[in-house]
Length: 228
Image (cartoon, rainbow, N blue to C red; front, side):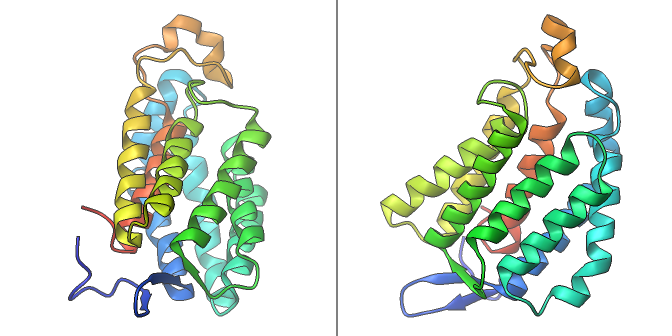
């Protein structure tokens, strides 16, 4: 998908595109809006296999994040991401606060001091975030968690770097991988969290964490011009 005529937030060089600090902030705002718009759906998914609060908790956390963004949006990307992470950890209950908080904290550590990110830098920062989630949640691919969306997206980004793809192409590939990973959770047996107590009764339910993680990747693609 081309970038002509759109305010994508890309800084354009002779060859490569980079995600600007302003575009990074717009992504956080877009993800917050997506969570608010899907709050009831995420909670409905969670009611089938969890505590029925995933959408409610995430929305509360990101609304709190939005109130703090104006004071930090002129900082570097790393500082912004770390502030988002700390805000989520302090305001979101259940497992989603620590996990999403860790994701953003690790992204922030990788992006420390940077005011723009090229594809390779974004792929590295995202990988750091996903690795943090895996460590924090002790989850693996196939456990029916947010990792089932995040890890395929991470791998798609890394493959795009290796293939020399453009940033929009890479973001589109990551979105597709996250979407397919989300759908693959439906026939899985949950192995982590409250859903794991259901055993085979968790089969047939789409994982709410994988769904919100897909929205995270999708809003990045939409905001930065990579959605097809």
